[in-house]
Image (cartoon, rainbow over all chains, first blue to last red; front, top):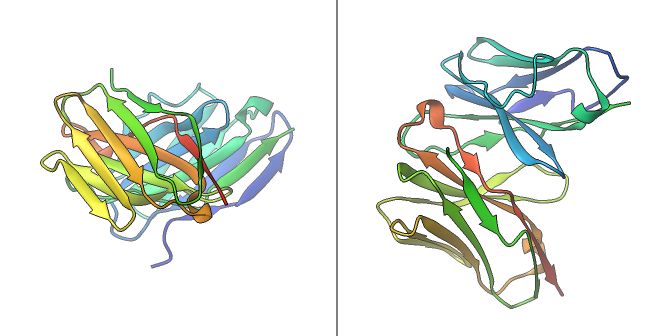
Length: 114
Length: 114
């Protein structure tokens, strides 16, 4: 298995532009998580899905952020319009929903908003 | 609400010494406690986990202990090596969480000096 796949790995954009981050979870996993990591705020959970349904989006910073999971093998995190303070590393992770199953992280997308 | 406090935020040890990182959780319904290691520029990866029906677990040079009464768990690394240098995150998961949501601590940056 290739593990969790994220694209792009690096994204540099200008303030005001739309940014779309993509994630392919491990095949067979039924939970998917989007995290943001910065030096100041650490590792923050933005939103997570179970069986393609959003369960908790309380970590989404504001309306500029949106996430979708149209099927079990694909999810997107969109920022529109982007701002410099959105610069961070965004991780996607997936897991099986059993009592003690590990979350596997993707390699992350490093986003820089100029 | 759910919260995990992690200490210290930074830890510097000499090669060969032991390192201890401590976490406290607030949700008494938590029943799963993983530890993740994140090397510089890499993704977080699970190194060890413990379930609420176990007090201690060891894997070679690393061990985790759990005190459910105090709602406290710790990571112990013995005979530290330079390759142990990384950021370590503790996490907790409630038995009531749909989809396996983890609450992460703030992270501990461990530096092992040769």
